[in-house]
Length: 279
Length: 121
Figure 1 (cartoon, each protein chain N blue to C red):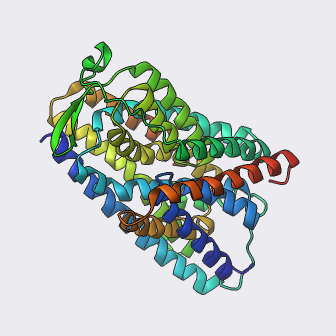
Figure 2 (tube, rainbow over the protein chains, first blue to last red):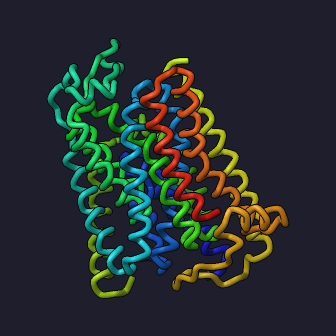
Figure 3 (spheres, rainbow over the protein chains, first blue to last red):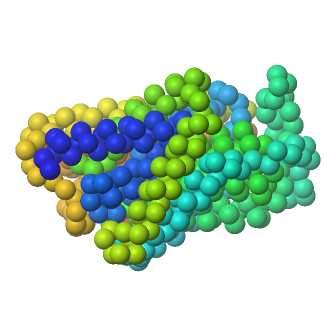
């Protein structure tokens, strides 16, 4: 493949991934890595390096918009980033130890989980507690968020459980070059009982910092090749921008199901190819 | 200075960083394709590649020579730096708020980030 063709094909695929990732809230990485490895035969290490870079771009690019909405909680985010960044460094080191077959299989399993969570949207529908527990209070994590036109107070619970899950989310991010926003939302929404809106926007804020923690390791290992990362970053960024504009009019429920089907297919391909040693 | 004002400043800073990075990467990409459009590339097998694209000094030197791959990589490096800048802003922000607990929390996060990035220094 010539450099021009490669750049255009990878750019187009990444734009589509970024578009769908923004519409469904899953991010572009979950599609970019399988598309590069399965369809174009790119080595897994180049694919996760380029994906990690695009994850930082979408997270940092969207931060300003999320802040304006007034949902994200910088204290919760910063505290949990201790866990995600340490996890990310550990994951990035493990990525060098594992072979690409093992990485492909793990990636497939994570995709299956993400697809499940996309369809059976994992929010606790019960009202978030307004009181923090003892540790949540000591860490002053509670806050307010806009709900039905007025500011609603919320408390934060089970900080140690959330912290532990966040370490896992960081490790997956460093291992696979994805944002692992799905796991971050589980940690905040389900374990710590933080309102869903606050969880998702704070998670977006954390994704970039988490990814930056493994980026240094990736860069020094040569996983980030600019000839691959350039079309991926520009494509995902453009796609995510368009996706966030289209979000208002999109049939989100239908899209989530379609996207989940695509992800399941990609997951099975990744696992089969990983087991067969073709990745 | 309250949390919300701090976050708005940080959010705008991040967006500016991402846009600047994207412009650099795009410019480097155009220069790369202009010079190498017929090259055959596939990335089917992994090779760690030239150290000039794997260290901060190497990337800076390569970009200064206006090498197209160096320019793209400098843009990507700037992109990686945007979340680091966000954490540095938070360190200062919490210090201004005299919130020492979260000042220390942000310092720990910054230490982890720098420990990882200095591998590429």
